[in-house]
Length: 524
Image 1 (cartoon, rainbow, N blue to C red):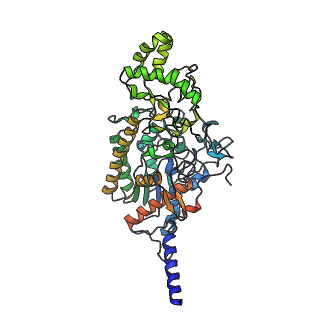
Image 2 (cartoon, helix red, strand yellow):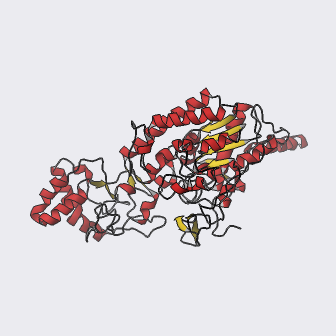
Image 3 (tube, rainbow, N blue to C red):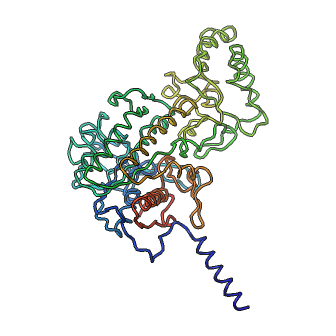
């Protein structure tokens, strides 16, 4: 009997050990070694993810939890040296340029409403107050691939005109240097390179207000929201990797996830009109309202569009459906403005009919294949203004409800054609990244696979599950794009895995449970 009890105890302890694989450190008896990697001088190149940007701002605590900073801490046990970041002045975030606010404070959750709101106060981080010294963390929020090669990208004089980056201007070694030049000047023995997200991100977060520049190899002609040509990306990425490895440095590179899987694009449903949207009021559309909408707007639109062979754009609203689709503008559709104007003129008069034709010429109801961006939730059901209506005027009643009687505009929704453009560019960038990793014999991190896990069931560690659900999933901050502290720790761990696999090192994971998923209003 005692023998059986002992056996059961042994099995139980073994089972507990197996189930306690919670992303904590490797077993203590395994010594931490660098393998063939030399970690004495580490530099990190990238964008806002490398910088530690979180909750729509850059602030000290967020920077301390940036994945390169976490990596550098893990490198110490394997011979890693000093690693400095160009810290902001405070924990409220935001930027000043000549005393004027050019970037707002970070977001936090307010009380029981759980509404993301800006931390009160004025930023104290002044762009023109230059930081001295060298910095291992060269992550620059807003940087695209080709920006890391651009001389003068940190010139304070160019910040106001958009010719330079305010974050890099704070710590660039000179007005004429580039991010890459400042990295190479430090003679790194090891580097990380995670860049390319911004080459499609601004296009996506703006709802596709920009241009796919595929075929245009002159980035000087690009707008801020444009998608970078894959050849431009490939040339920039190869140049970065070639320069960083020229003196024998080893490193780790990461591919790009489909950014359309980020909470910024997956939180607001396409059919929310009877559902309460986080951060806004209850947009319930009652039975009487539905009947009126069908009689006065949706019915006539459906009839006219059907006559032009486009009846599938609009359907009558159901009085029994649990959710009702939003009304949106889709610029990929054939513009039927002239046809609608002609159809409505006999009943509405020429002037009003022309207005209806203009408003609804490319209108349709949203579908599950559309991605409503996070910031749109604040506009649903509100009255369009001259600034955001797309027409330069505030439309009168009854066309005064965004998403219900007035189409949400291009900036509010990513439609399938725009989603396809983002995906195609991302796929092309990832081909380049993986081929460069192989050619330069670098460690490779598959962040695309990680985000897929987060958005399809989540990643379990210990008693926790981390997912990409907005605010509650734990992986992303309140801006819906950038990771939380715990999300950055997860990135650090998958970088550690790639480094260990490539170079035979035995770097340790960090314990994800020790990193917060949200920051409070006041950070001590």
